[in-house]
Amino acid sequence: MSRWDGAQRLLARVLPLPMRTTLGLVRRPQYSYCMWQAARLAKRLGLDRISVLEFGVAGGNGLVAIEAHAEEIRRTLGMDIAIYGFDTGGGLPAPVDYRDLPYHWRAGFFAMDQPRLRRRLRTAQLVLGDVRETARVFHDRTPAPPIGCMFHDLDFYSSTRDSFQILEGDAARFLPRVFNYFDDIVGNEVALYNDFTGQRLAIREFNEAHPTRKFAPCHHLVRRRPRVWHQQIFVLHDFAHPRYNAFISQEDQQLPLR
Image 1: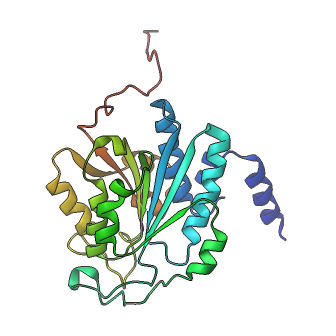
Image 2: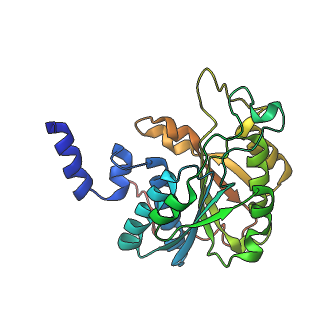
């Protein structure tokens, strides 16, 4: 083990989760960032439970990381986190058309070993099936606490669009601002993600169809040491949410004349 590796391990034991996230000393820092911010918002709103959703579980490494982050957040903030993972259980379906990027994705990619994953999970619940159905009926069938953040890794335009059905309905099902990570909006020279296909198109169409619910990027992240995942964090703003205007900032902000 190198001296730097030893220092990283020491820092990982003593630094709080937000600082380790900034330094990249946690698994999936984009997940820990969204979860911490959602939990902090919920706490300031007087809540003690939230839900975290992952769309596109694949082998399950994301859910395992979510469980670890959730346990640390519970110990630190006293926030309980219910975790739900949406997946077909059998890998990607066949692409519907060009918007699903069939030059990049193929049916059967990212298959799940269900028995092995279930043995590994401690609290997360798998929601298996076609997301067109599972997202549509989730709120009716699951007494979940308000959704605080969501991780989107369904790859396709069509699947991402269908998963957005979960964002319909009663505002009480969500925090007024929901933190989101989209895995498939940056990519590389093969993927060539753009605003007319894939997840970017699904985001744009959702925003166009919803006057008071909008996905927006987190502009404040440009002030920090740049990470690729900073470009992949969006917040769903529900401007009509009854608690959207609830004050959560620092009290008594003044700049007296000197």
